[in-house]
Length: 413
Image (cartoon, rainbow, N blue to C red; front, top):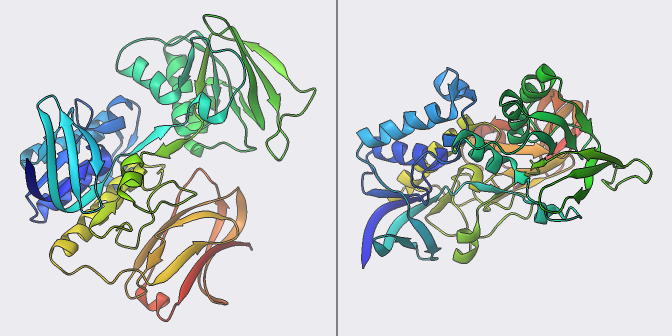
């Protein structure tokens, strides 16, 4: 059976919820949101710490409180959210195959919003040698056990990686009575927000070992110890610097990967760096009528930015459905020196554009330059730029006028 819908939104996390609410408030009511978990809200349901909503709502909320704002609004608007439902395929002609306990459904959509979020890198993804005992968790799994299932993961803990979830779990496990021996970070700087380093590590006297990594794991049934070592500027362990740490738990906070298996199957072009879709300034992918937003497009550091990006995608969908979609991007945008990636990948050059990006390392007293040909059309000065913090800038149409291509690069002031 094929069910016709104006819009199908895949994912009922913060991006999917914000997008569907914006759609319905703007008059697009024939939509369905598909969520594989039993409840809407996504990862926010297990993020019981505060710090959410400052940008979006002007107040400090916990993750569940932030999600509930959108869940309540979606309910009031009568939005159909199918939970415990798995999307198994998205075709290039916007047919979405869904499976749940009631059977298999096929939705034929005029437009699709991809909002599947991201997943964590595992031990296998980073190749830590050693045995395979119990007691090794990704930070998100540990968070789910402690905050949702009320199960403590261990007593003597080492955390590898200083991403935000890892930093937050260092504090959370400490508050639950565990001893967090150290947070070990391969880079010479933290990969989390500065406020989380202060509030989650420094406030609890938890050591942060920069330029270190785990080089071995020991234990038969349960983890007994990990061996750490210093690394050089290429990330390779330095001989003679190894140190064994007795512990029963290793928590991995080593990066996130956008959930783009459905996008790959649909033939959507992906960015080699972000692993998210290649999009134009409307957040439209390489397949017309398919849009991407949130962590499935690029990993964000603030959920408020996820919501804003999702609302932008929804507005682009509305213009697309009305036949008023802007001209496809004709001005290519690429990352230059010091910039790891930049989104969008193309713009029309005929209207204001919002760019988001991350730098490739720490920079101090630097300029972020937008270059067309050999001409710098706009520069922004920064006291400090950090890879862990997304940079978002706006350029006006008047500043983009006449640009044939665009490069975003760092220069030291």
